[in-house]
Amino acid sequence: MDLRKLEIFSSVARNQSFSAAAEALHMAQPAVSIAVRKLEESLDLTLIDRSGRRIALTAEGAKLLSQAEAVLEQVEAIEQSAGAMRGLLEGELSIACPSMLATYFLPELLSGFLGEHPGLTASVTQAGTTQIESMLLEGQIEIGVTSADTDADLDLLPLINEQMVVCVADDHHWARRRYISVEELHHTPMVVYESGYFIRQQLDLLCQEASVTPDLRMQSNFLPLLVSMVKQNLGTTVGLRTMAAKEPGIVGIPLSPRVKVPMALARRRGRQISRANQAFLDWAAIKL
Image 1 (cartoon, helix red, strand yellow):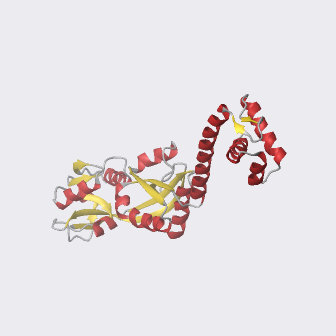
Image 2 (cartoon, rainbow, N blue to C red; image 1 turned 90 degrees about the horizontal axis):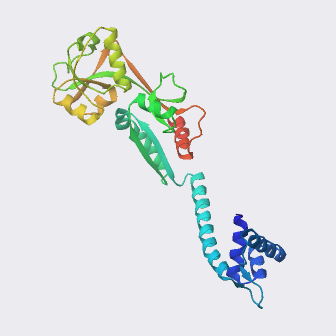
Image 3 (cartoon, rainbow, N blue to C red; image 1 turned 60 degrees about the horizontal axis):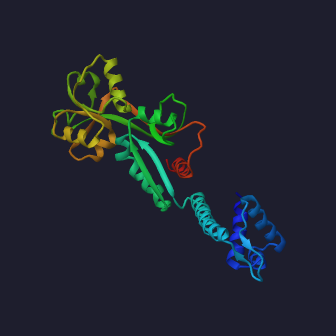
């Protein structure tokens, strides 16, 4: 159905006049009459009684007017919403991120972006890098944080390149060490991320290469729990240098050999994403 014809019919009905409707719509009166006639023909209904000196709606016309005005109001609302989103006045930024980066890096980045776009909101999903890459490639999410070393079919925007450290309680017997060798992790009690997180993958790779087997006392993707267990000396963990710096009661000791953790904002290559998500990537490319 032609929305323009509904708009013309609605104007004629409200003004109770073809000529008044034509003036309001900046149209010629014959064009208004033709549009209403074509609408009636397409519906096979008589909508306007033209037998009197003033036009009047038929019962069918009155019912259609109510429905037409509801449709036109919805169309106007959609147009206003689309216009707002084009101007980034509203919408939602949605991102998936590992918990460590979501805790220690993402707040500053998001607060800067959302501060410049107060009409936007943000939704953050916590997941490991392996899951995030699968979600990106399967179209479940539009942007996420993953390893900058990935070989997946993703476009990457470098985010950080942090040193990986062994995190211990500040009263742990290693707390004053300058570095910890990977070999010293053999049979060491540890509380670590579950498989699927990049930093856990790095730990597993280092231990495998050195034929080292830590004593994994607990595995969890819940970062506050891991931090609490380290502070209580249940075990050590591995994390980013920033984590140790921002967590009171925890000391970060570099591994030997030194290990860097490069992370990046990612999107599936060639995929069209929402204006809010694209705006965030564009903004981050300038700020990072």
